Amino acid sequence: MASESFRAYRRRLPHWRTAEATYFVTWRLAAGQRELAPPERTIVMTAIRHFEGQRYDLVAFVVMNDHVHALVRPIGDRRLEDIVHSLRSYSAHEIARGRGGGRIWQDEYFDRAVRDENETNEKIAYILNNPFKRWPEIDSYEWVWPCQN
Image (tube, rainbow, N blue to C red; front, side, top):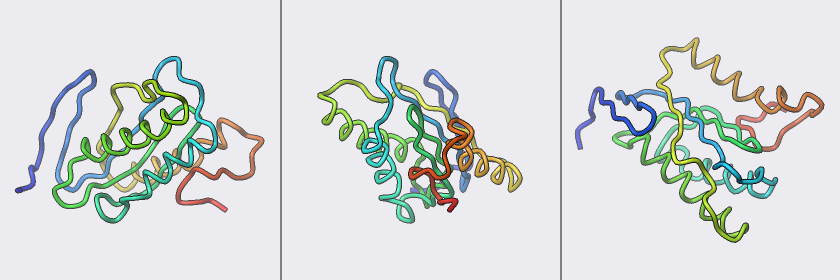
């Protein structure tokens, strides 16, 4: 399969794809879902780490109580939308099983191609600091990678 240099498509949000890009991706819980409990955050974290280095290079991620941020670079001809679909689908299935069913994630997710090293560093800092901004009283957070201990 030949790599495409650029393509765009639209669902509710526009999605732009370019070869060898790093993407900042965010997805949120569906309306009416309760916050992710610690074991559910671990399910999402484990799903994200599972194919790291095989389907995508993982730069950073955080699993918060109501959303996920990840900075990923698809490997080879892997498509970001397939990667995100797989992560969301698997984690939703596992979480819904423990909750007795129901939709877990919003239908759409946000993604942005990161433009340069400065923006990459900004996104990494944003991801790593997200839990500490939301909960200033905490000293560590288990569901952020790379760890900041």
